[in-house]
Length: 260
Length: 361
Ligand SMILES: Cc1ncc(C[n+]2csc(CCOP(=O)(O)OP(=O)(O)O)c2C)c(N)n1
Ligand code: SF4
Image 1 (cartoon, rainbow over the protein chains, first blue to last red):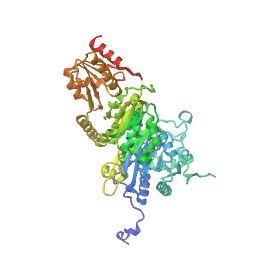
Image 2 (tube, rainbow over the protein chains, first blue to last red):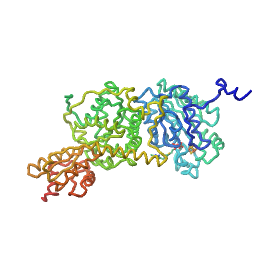
Image 3 (cartoon, helix red, strand yellow):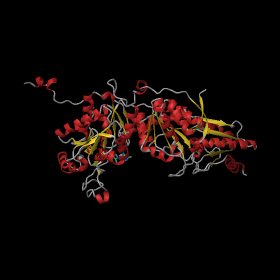
Image 4 (cartoon, rainbow over the protein chains, first blue to last red):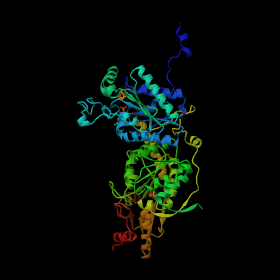
């Protein structure tokens, strides 16, 4: 069989979504941000709502998400994306509105905006990239840095006595009456990518049905900040982050998932 | 003639916003401006016009809700008072940098810190010298009556959308709390989504349709050469405001040998002081800046040749006086008088200060 005979519409198994621009990603090789961007854009394309979707980029490595996502985007001040999303969604409820935020943005400086947008049940989607570190500023400790983890501001490892505990903000927002769907996934292998995509699909569907806020955490890597090559970074993530941040659904249809 | 009502300044802003067809108000309670949010919540404008009103969890959230609603081409208003306005500063800088239209009112109270809840004009520097970071100017309107509290809502949005810039209504606890007769405008319809699309689709992030490139609202340019170009564009806008948007009022200046310069509530007090001075045969006039940025530099400079002295009357330790001095370029003596920290000078106190300073009694 010749190559030309194989390149046919019916044989297509994967194509790049036109909702990703041609710009070269500014992320480090192996970083999870690019995959997470693609998943969100694929879902929006498949739902056919790109003409009515507004994304909010945070402050963090994904501040330039608007260079890569081919939809209308607003760049928010550090931590304030849920407030910006509220301003848009409240005045234009027919639009699909999502925020895309890192852990420093969402769970440190923006904790109040996160909790109150979730608690009000704003009908938006929050995509939360938890890489346990401040990537953009060069690898400082984040609210999600786990015990013992080394960063540039916890050079001997996170000392809980000195630096306080890592924050499970996702479990926290799941407790709030305004959240309808809360889940934690990852993007480090194809199976995980598929699960994340299904969760993101569900999140936007919930927004379409005006059921409340959907919150998807993506546990991700930061090879540059962690100072590990991409494959090792993913291994480290599975072995060290997953026990503290276990993947899976946390709240479904407005009900907390019971852990047996 | 529009409907006449007896209202507080804060209520007048709220009612004027509904009638202006404002799409959204976001705010957080703080004295002496909480009546704005209270009035709006009681009035239920969502039933009258569809206007959204939301009490935010903080001023940080409120100003960023404003940023969001402004990014989608909506008319959005917020109000606060000094400590809250300090928290707005990062957001105002972003709004100016991203070139978004909105109207913000500061019903100023005495500071620094938690200060006092009484009236003050000590936020002049913060407002017109750039309270947030970066090279930007905040278009500032200073109302001196309840009528102007109402009127400047419409004027503020006109300027905000004309220049795609944040506009500040710099009021104070006296104008916000006092009751006066106010003539209210007829109800304007809110812009429809189609109208917004028609007017603002070039820049507003209202959804990328296949016929255009995506719109991006951002203040970030990592390439400094581009950031410098963007700054030049902003500066050109500010220069245009200086050339075309200066507003002020003159009282008794034709034969004046002395001048008081005062805005807002201080201008009301100074007007009375001038009447007292005129009764004594002293030829004093008043220049009341209505726009603080752009400052009425030229009218002030034009008056200078006939003057022996200028008194800048402010409810502060002397802030606007710097702009008065810049305008007259040392050609005439300029002094300051004002009570501050929440204290309000009386017309007699102003007159005494004036006489001691310039007449020598
Ligand atoms: C008000 C403010 N404070 C601090 C910063 C500096 N800053 C930029 S990005 C960042 C951390 C972002 O980390 P995170 O949200 O975890 O995202 P990541 O870069 O890891 O994707 C900080 C502190 C800023 N831009 N604004
Ligand atoms: S610094 Fe970390 S989070 Fe940022 S792009 Fe590189 S790997 Fe990704």
